[in-house]
Amino acid sequence: METKETLFTGFKMNGFAMLFIIALLLGVSIASFFLIVRPNGFTVTTGLLGILISMLFIPGFNRLEPNEARTMVFFGKYKGTFKETGFFWMNPFLDAKKLSLRARNLDIEPIKVNDKIGNPILIGLVLVWKLKDTYKAMFEIDSQTMANVATGSNAVASRMNAFENFVMIQSDAALRQVAGQYAYDDSESNVEELTLRSGGEEINEQLEQKLNERLAMAGMEVVEARINYLAYAPEIAAVMLRRQQASAIISAREKIVEGAVSMVKMALHKLSEEEIVELDEDKKAAMVSNLLVVLCADEAAQPVVNTGTLNH
Image (cartoon, rainbow, N blue to C red; front, side):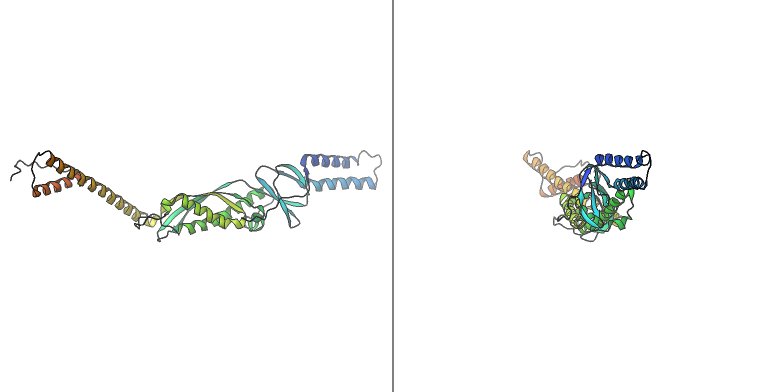
């Protein structure tokens, strides 16, 4: 991603040193009114000028914690981004807009979309994002208007809420785009293909890629994006549940029949191998039928005792 951010290279000095200078200047200016025996116009003017200069210097103090930054603007011109942690003093006429570079979580509420085959589904997203280019974040999108950014201590929170709102809207669009390219599952077709249920990491990677493409213009980066909720929409959930139950029953029946046939085959082989009884084709067919009924029935079979002979 091409960056427009540059580091601030203007004048700066230790904030505590400047604080001492301002306190000294302010003290000398105030003392000039009391220590001079006969104050005149010059001393009064000098004292007032010293107090005024001290007041003008005070807004130049800036304090930064780790993973914070300030975009420095001098009468509308971008002068760079300041990222050094600590307490500093800089030109008081610089407009230092504070930003947070820390990672932030965003949990997107489930939205209703249509999958590849037109089924309405509910899909949700959780992602981790952070600012990467402070210039684009501040000047490429209208974040201040979106959030009605305040001044003072609430300014940083308002800006970051504006960025979060931008990420939320773009995440919604990216999620709809990705979800529309895949089916919910592969039950509609015998062809095995990537689906939202089975895609896992591949779907998440594509989602992360789409999000980064959309957020690059705003200087934001998605660290991780994952689908955290996936279900059919309520209006078709009951129908899809019955379809899944039917598929499960069919799969179970196939296993039962396969096992029953194997057991019948083994029984006939044992009877013939150990010469316990000789069965003609009709008796074998009847035995196979009875065994299959017993083995494949949902309920326990009721035995019927035959007191006749096998020769009848």
